[in-house]
Image (cartoon, rainbow, N blue to C red; front, side, top):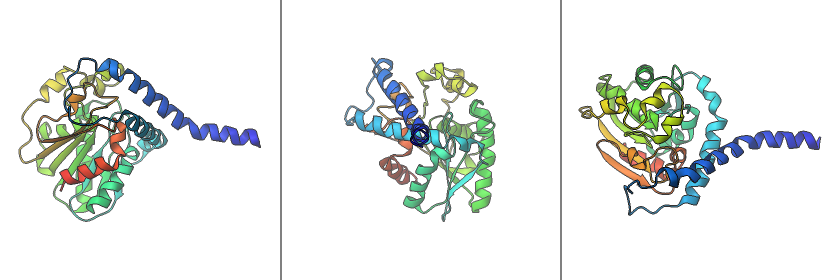
Length: 271
């Protein structure tokens, strides 16, 4: 019986062990990958220990809900009144990864919140993901009876959000876009990830060069970035091409999704 309980405990702890190992490795190589990069916000205080702790917890949550990539998209996180907020996940993330952020935004704004899954899959190109996400946005608008939505895109989800309005011409459906830890100018670690979308997120890619166009008319833009982003480097890449930007120095990449202060900032930007 004792052995059985120990096995169950080991299985239960596995996501946390994997998450903190991953966070530790990426934090360890962060100074190497960012050596020589300019500091985009020298006045913002950094708290590496807190950022590491929150990142490990966020990564564990992402592992625990990874099965939700099988769930139907879109997922209504919380009902509410008014213009819907639609959350778009990053690379290998799911609607479940966005659940905590969605519930916080619902509590802060009272508005309906939906979360999308990447379809047809994690490794598809950003244009294809944007096409299916557009269909999901239209479904959410039909469900809520609203004429426009606000998009919040984490990491690659921010580029998908921009592609919807800047390349697919769907600005009439979107009032505002907030990106979180999005590699607007690329991420070095995309060189060691697989999939068409990651190739498009490499610094200097033809895709990113084509995305340097003027922002969509009538859409409000804002971006949030981490000065300790263990996934997107250079960290300055997270600053959007236009609109208001806010830096956080005490949270890392996936941690942006579970930090209460980040949720409050998103709610302010969408007010």
